[in-house]
Image 1 (cartoon, rainbow, N blue to C red):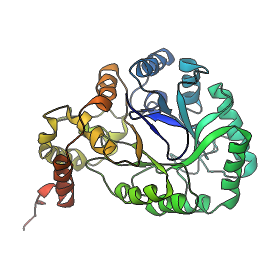
Image 2: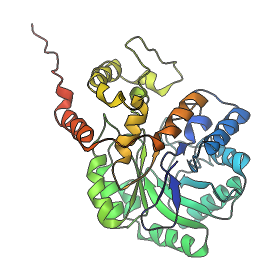
Image 3: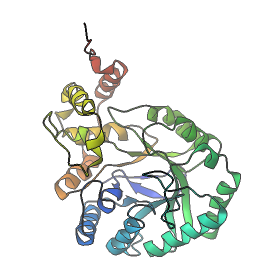
Image 4: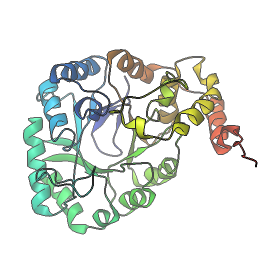
Length: 326
């Protein structure tokens, strides 16, 4: 497993990381603490040293699972996120808690995360789904710098979301705030606005962390038109076209499977971008974990293969939309 640095910091991350939300939130199936901890430890055995969570994942469960799995193991790099006040149990909408970036709350949130993780320092502290008001908040970034000087965090960044997009927030975070990392959605099938961040990241020395590298599982190459998702799975709420149109695009990517699996090629395509520090695939069982972890040591994609993918994306995978005639 190869390692990369977060920009100009000394924080090292494995090229393949582990997004802890899959084992702590129930969105990808329920896992007991024992099952989750076992999978996290197996990932470390396979060379994964970077684990990304958030204080909201399972209302702190993601952090406590990491503490159970690794304790104070300094060979493990941990990133977590903050910004949502889930402690009061009040939601602004069906799915989101209210955000709070006041100094009082952020200091409280940091101390709670440190306590749950069982650590004195968090390697990467990320603003969770920041809107522009957070990016424009001078006091917030002064506070993050203060945390660094106090030794409570080693680096800070922003984790964009929850859905694909958030271009202006990402650009301003890198250009104006000089964040150490930017986490965003990016994959073979969903490249915008992710690819717009790369040249800015190069100039500002921000490291890109990529989530949803397999387009919510499509690029794992296991789905068919008959695939049905349980009601508890968030993909069951997507339009059916997400699956059917995606499968057609996958047919154009068969050439990537000559040296590795499609899921591994999807990761290697992302890692071909120098500003990307780590990919965070959705991991929820051991077989899948082993396949993803092995991707780091697979052969790099050739320049020709990368250009072929770029051409497909630029031309919408050369798919003609079906026209309805009366």
